[in-house]
Image (cartoon, rainbow, N blue to C red; front, top):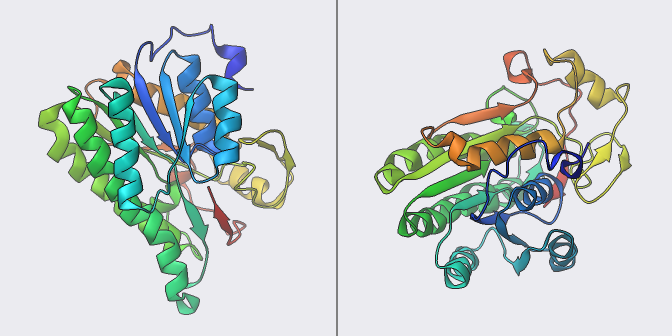
Length: 280
């Protein structure tokens, strides 16, 4: 169920807010951008894939900006662009990422750098530039999209999960450092989510964000079995939680890592999860 069907169910939680979403060219970042626009935000959507950004921007009335989430200067330019356009930034979300899977005994420098460049260094740069921009705007919400694989103890995902765990910790540090400037810094940590980019185990693409995956798919079945709520988490679940974290309803909450996983982190990451090489 997409956000379009539920637009009138809630008040517009981001009415008049100025928001930037990095990693918006597919998957969770795409869905977050949709939800923010539905709830009244002016949105800049950013990623490396310009064609996808322009498609999304046309659908939701956003401004597309090409940005490499690994690059310090690109990320600074993105923050500067937002400040020049609006004079302030209220919300910034980093949903950029790549997945590299490998057993520790098989890890190569290429595996580590491919992930760390964007999901460690890039996230730190993003927090610096957008933390400063939001602080200069009088406060707001900065959100890192991480992963419950950094909370559970997976195998075959050390490059990815260790980088996400580092950002979970850095999120808490940033919350302390930017707190006096009224910048709330939190992380939203999804579990396995079927998306057009992150299509573990197959499935039927629905759009740039979503994939329909049957419950008897081996990957889906493994997660359902190890999830107290007994269902697969969707990009719309992630978008809804990110929306609330971005909104003033979360005004007194900072430094938190919020799993979006039906309770999967309470049990274990299924061994059916496959190593993958994907980018957003």
